[in-house]
Length: 101
Image (cartoon, rainbow, N blue to C red; front, side):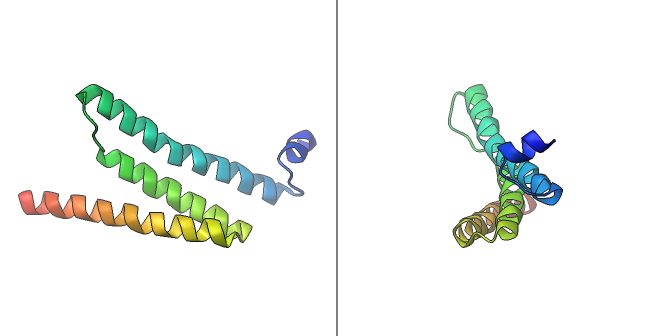
């Protein structure tokens, strides 16, 4: 376990778990591009599926939490704006579906 902590530059188990959480958050955030790419390939057109926005929101919230823990104001600012935009897009999508139903 110590070799992993050394490799990730952490001094405690708590820090280790936060780094693991941050890595999972980044994977979640990256997953949105895979979802978008697969959807576009299937349709042979550039599309943005609703799952893209859910992955964006989940990854953004996780990365925001990680940034707050790390006390990184640049990262906090960047993720907070993204989380607002992802939430707003989901709100607009669901509002449109309600209107059309």
